[in-house]
Image (cartoon, rainbow, N blue to C red; front, side, top):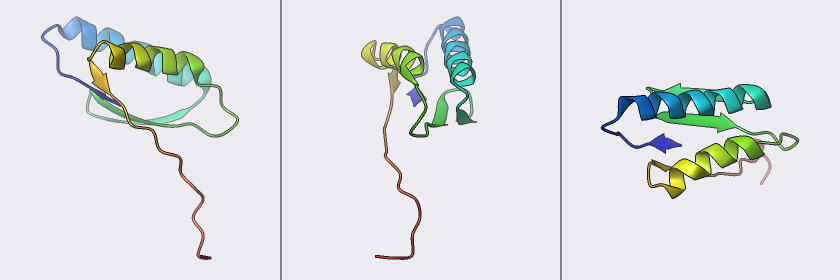
Length: 78
């Protein structure tokens, strides 16, 4: 997820705090690049619904972009 720059610094801080709290509550792994870009690893048995709610709210408001990818385990077999 990429959070857009905003003229209200308090918004960014509050939003990243909510995202970090939901990542921690769900027990997920994440990696931040700066204060506006986060990658979250969501394994199959996880329930990230509350995290998705927070993220979708920001995307719907035009304050963020996100990308979803389904990764497959590495294999040398075709």
